[in-house]
Length: 82
Image 1 (tube, one colour):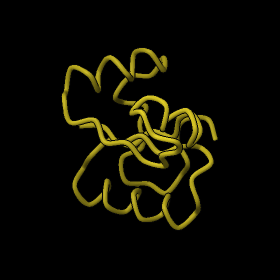
Image 2: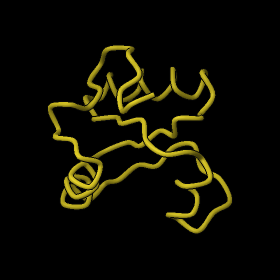
Image 3: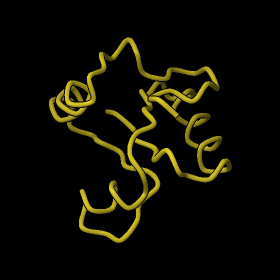
């Protein structure tokens, strides 16, 4: 599983998902903007996307030029180039 949080997501949204992902040991990456993430799923704007397929999550990380060891796992730093 992988959670993508847009770089322009609100601070409260970021805090909430960083906390939840930390709690459940789910990797989180800051990537794109809300409009871009929305286009991926056919919506206007989306702040957060969860990818539940492990192969897809790995492919997304590769496309972003990241390895799983580079994603946010429990600290409160904004990972993913924000």
